[in-house]
Length: 487
Image 1 (tube, rainbow, N blue to C red):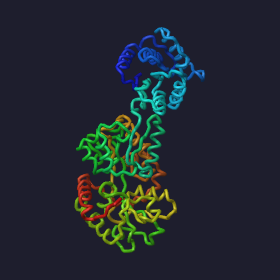
Image 2: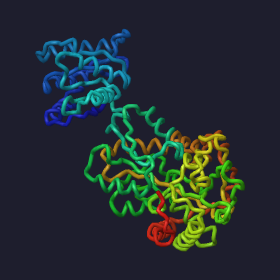
Image 3: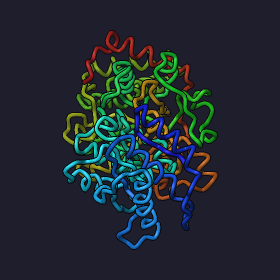
Image 4: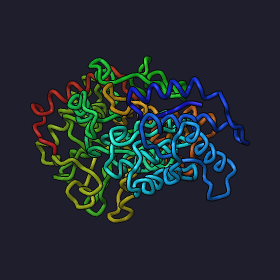
C-alpha cells in the first residue's frame, strides 16, 4: 500500500511518517486484504488538520467492506477522544465521478472539511476535480489524500497541457479522447492547435518557470527540431515501455526525443476548381494552375512546410539536405513569380472555399481532410511521382513541464498499441508499425484506408543531418529567395 496525496504541509509529512510506522498494527482483515491503514491515516488526519471528511466504501449497496470501514472510522475517532460527526463520513462507490459527487455533499454542510481522506486514489482524484470545479485550490483550501497506489494516482499531476495538436491531424481527436477516457481524472488543456513546430519551441522558452496553463508539458514537432531542443536544454529524457520498438534512427539514444509517426508529402486537389489533376511537382508550375497552389504552413516556422520545400528540391534532382533546400526555394520562387503560388496557410476550409484549390501537405492530413469533406467538394489525393519525401515527427517532454508525470503517462498511452492504432486510423504510419505488424496488432481496417503500398515505394527518409541542413536553408533564405509572406 502507498499513499498518494497533495498534502504539502509539514504536519502532513509528520502524519504520513507516523501512519507508515503504525499501519501494520491492529489491522482489520477482510476479503480483499486489510483496511485499517487508511482508517488510521484518516483519524490522524482529523487530529492534524481539524475537520476531515472520510470517504469510505459504499454502504448503500450493503457492502460488508464499506460497513467495516465506517465502523473503524467511528471506533478510531472514539479512541482518540473525537466526537463522531456522521455528516463527515460519506459512503461512496470506488469511481472517479463519485469523488466529484462527494464534494457536492460535503460542501453543502455548514462547515465544510479542511481535508478529505478517500479510501482509494481514483475517488481522491475525483475529489480534487470537484474542488477545482468549485474554484478551490489543493492544498490551500483543502488537503486531499488517497490510498492504494494505482497507476493514475502515481501520475496524476492534473492537468496535462498539450500544444499544436489539431484534432484532424493524424487522428489526434481520437487520441486525445482515448486518453481522457482511460484517465478521466487528468484534464487535458489544449493550447494553439494550429501552431507550428517553431511555435512549440518558443512556447517552452517563453514559459520557463511558469506553472500556469500556458506552459506546455509535451510537444510534437518535426524531427529536425529534436536535436536543437535537446542542445538548448528544452527537453527532459524519458523512455517509454515500448522503447525497443522504436527504430534507433528515429530516437535520441538518451530518451530526450523519439519518433511517433510518419507520412509522405502529397497533394490535395479540389476537382470543382481544377480541371486536370496534377500528377507531379513539375505540373504545379504550369500556367493552368495560376493562383491555385498553397502550402499547409509557413515555411519559416512549420515543419510540414519546410519538408515540402525539400520534397520539391528532390523532385528537381537535388541531393537531400542543403542542396534540396536551395533547389526547392528556387522552385517556389519560380512558382511565386508565375503567379501560381498562393501565400495562404492552406487547410481543408481554404481548399473547399476555393482560396487554395491545390494544397501540399502530409498524406495523413490530406486523407483526413478528404474524408471530412466527402464529395463537397470532390477531391483527388496525389502521391507525386517524384520527390516522394517521407517525414518523421517526434515527441518530447518539456524540461520545464509543470506536470511531468502526467506527461509521462501521456507518452505511455501514445506508444501503446491503442495509441499507435489511433494514429493509424488517422492515416499515419505509427513509429512502431513494423513491430506491430510482426505481432499482428495493427488495425487491419485502418490499413485498408491507406493508399496502396506501391505509392510509397519511392519514399525517401532523409537523415537527421539532411533535415537540419534543409531546415536551416529554408528558414534563413525563404524571405530573400521566394519573398512570399505566408500567413
